[in-house]
Length: 188
Image (cartoon, rainbow, N blue to C red):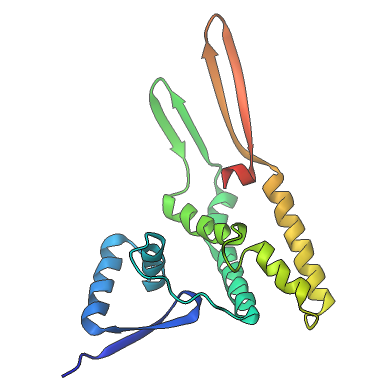
């Protein structure tokens, strides 16, 4: 007698079939590890090289679709609402740290997605997607121009000085105040 099989879509829309016992194991690992879903768990396994890499050959249209999906998802993360409604601060004084920062979960998901866009070893990096736009005459010029403008705006954002700075007061022979500012790219 064979076990029933469960299927779900994982990274890059590849279908993975699991026996019910393996599926139950994964559900338990997801619950215990605090993962959002199967995709996040499998992505973590891939990152840690505990799972053989899934096929990565995607057509250009699949890459563009995946890029669009990730872009839409990036816009929906709750981190943006948090930033809009809260001023993040962190202070160290007399050995005590106090902060008003977003939870790690709010930060990690958007950063992982942004990292996909910034690292050229990923098929959906902005530079690699740009190559698809540039090399495909079937893509209308209006879309190409919109992408170039978005890419330019993103690069301007990355190179802009962030709101994050480190202020320090150092006492050696006299009081010295120093502020270090970071670009958004340095923060990411």
